[in-house]
Image (cartoon, rainbow, N blue to C red):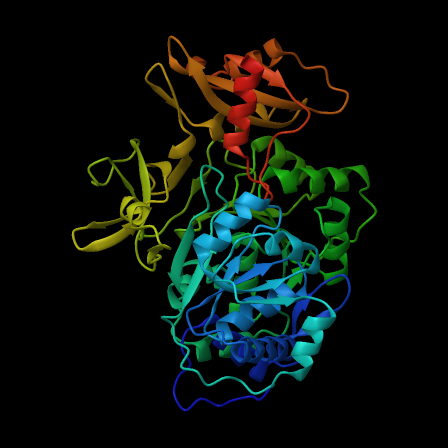
Length: 529
């Protein structure tokens, strides 16, 4: 790594943030795993060498590079190394099979892949005419980095360089959300600074130097998920340390081992599928881990149900639960600090700024108490990669102002906050009434005998759709279908109560812990016969 002293302000680009932090705080821990710690200087050096190697392979500015691996330090190399080379890292879901991979590699126009050896055969089986190079992790990769130049590239990076995040595709084929990197930093990677004004990279460094004891944030989800990439970005934009979970599969005990070792201050879940096992592991062995460093539990990507919140509070008394609302298209659009005093509302309510609005179908702001579509303005994405139709449907201009409408129904409250009701794409229309599955799922998960649940709409001759629940019982529980309905009737309107309840071994979820609604709907239809 060769430090540089720019004669003009650095562009607001994540690669420049890393370089500036490495110059000012070379020995501060940037990434911590169970195996070792990497300083900002070490992370910067690795990313610089990878960037030079990619350029030597012919990767041009703006070209797309697949990152196809489970969590490991090379994922961090790839994120920053691509941006240093002005290439675009593309998050590949490593659990995808042949057809899914073929779609993603083709749709993203990947010219190179930074790939773990266990996935090479799957990619070689694809017909990918754009793919020119594969950089295989392991000895080949290590040798390439060792041989590459440590001189930083002078290639005209700017805040206009692109960052593309492929969505999980829980309700359809994945879409590549295209951001200007400066807009991404302002919209999604500034939460570590609590959304404070961001004037320059130099300002960020000055603030980071002034903090003697940086926080340690834990990215426990897969880096192929935007939420985990954004935790890394939020940490480093504020000069903090990020703990990276690198086991091949999720383990609650493994997460807690890392919390203890890295002295994690903020632990981030991606919904119930991570929150519940961690809480239950602590409750089962309350004296196993020293969790005294842990000040807060954060959550994003999927909502925590009230039942899981209560378990987290029992497992980690005295900690706040910091909820964030956002999406691949909106960035971080709302937040709330849950100290347990909100009475257990089924739908989460967030504090938002004046960049967030709730619109009716004519794109007029909804008055308080009226449901509509949530929108955000300000630094928003450019659109979807190679999909002008979906771009036009999601990104709207109102009175000369550009808005993104990610597809979430919401309601403005009298105090100015916004209650997020759920995804419109999975909304159930039963006899003319709209039912948001997330609301019913939250109610189901408040029952002590329910471990996990998903709610879908299934065809019904009279109502068009009916509310159907798939429920995973707790081990040893004997809850019945009628028990479930009686529990729901006590908490929500009758039209929202599941008409059919099926008990299943495990709720279908995507590799990033979100409910897989298409798979769940298919299973429910099969069970209904």
